[in-house]
Each structure stands twice: as structure tokens, then as C-alpha cells.
Length: 248
Image 1 (cartoon, rainbow, N blue to C red):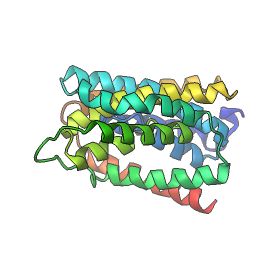
Image 2: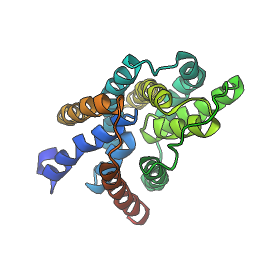
Image 3: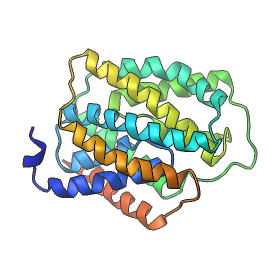
Image 4: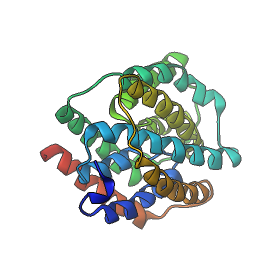
């Protein structure tokens, strides 16, 4: 498909860096947001997943560097989840899912994204606990498989789990999630490419726009940033996309 022949593509290209900004500000790559936008503009499912994963690789890397340089990254916390998630993300990426089922699963995922953006999962734990190895491997494997299957990095699922279970603080969860997103996106993308899915050359334009938003989001998010108005605006976009996916 020709990106520039799509109706309203200018609006899509204007919103994309804003989505990258907000997700990078909380340590995420933004795949759920990119997928929501692509769903609103009726992108083909086969184009949506690999494109979102490519954008994730760039934005999550920026976000990780920004948070890690501030000393928020916890290697031990990251490794206990990543160990099982990487191979399972590849496996999930190899599986082709029916488009109608895919859209319903994505809609449910967007509900989680809305709750995260509105701060439902943003509470700092009062006491930090060690992650039991079996739980880390189990959560990592499940999130990794789901990430590869849907075309996300899994941070939107992992970071609330870290906070709810008391395994890390907010900035620490953001840094770990950014690294987790990167490795899962790379593994999931490899799984998709292994079954013949290809990335549209025009995706390079989307990468540049996402990079601009991601650079600014990573910078402000790793310091002190909490723009509730922008988060609410993104939540509205996600809700509209969610409704379209459910009832399309």
C-alpha cells in the first residue's frame, strides 16, 4: 500500500511522534499506541505488526538509554524476565493469527494501555521484594509469547506487574521495561521475518517521526515529567481505536 495515498495520512503522521513521546516518557516503546493508530487508519494487519515492532526497537532503545543513564536500570530484575521471554517472543512471532481474532486481542491490550496512561498502575510500592525465579520465568515466557504474537514489546504488561507485585520502583520498572521491550521486539520481529513477512520501505518515514518523539519523551520522562493532559488525550485516541477494533 502507498502510505501517502491514504486519506488523512497527514493527521496520522502528526500524531505518531506525540504517541512516541508519551510512551518513551514512561519507558515504553509505544507499540500498542502505534497499533492503535494504524488500526484507526485501517492499515493491513500484516503491515501493522512488523512496523510496530520496528518502531519499538528505536523508541525503546532511546527510552532505555535515558533511564539507564540516570541509574534506574536493574540488570538482575531485567534478566529474570528476559531469559524466558526472548525465545517465546520469537515463537509467538512465527505464528499467524486470524485478523478478526487479532483485532479483538489488540482491543483488550489497548484497555490496559489506557489504564496505564491514566495512572491506575502507577503506584510506587512501599516495600521492594525479590522476584522468585519461577515467577519471573513464568511471567517472562507468557508476556514474550504474547508480544511476538500481537506485535508489541510487552512493557505495557510487564511494568504494571513489577509495580503491583512490589518488585521495583516506578523509574526502575520503566528502565527494565524499556530493555525488555527492545529484546522482545527484536526477537518477535525475527519470528515474523522467518515466515516471510516483510517491512514496507515507507516504514523508514515512520521511524524518523517516532525517533523525534522518542528522544524528547525519553529525556523528559527520565527526569520529572507527568503531563496529565497529554496522557488523557492519548487515552482518548486509544479508546476510539479500541472501539473500532471491537466493532469493525
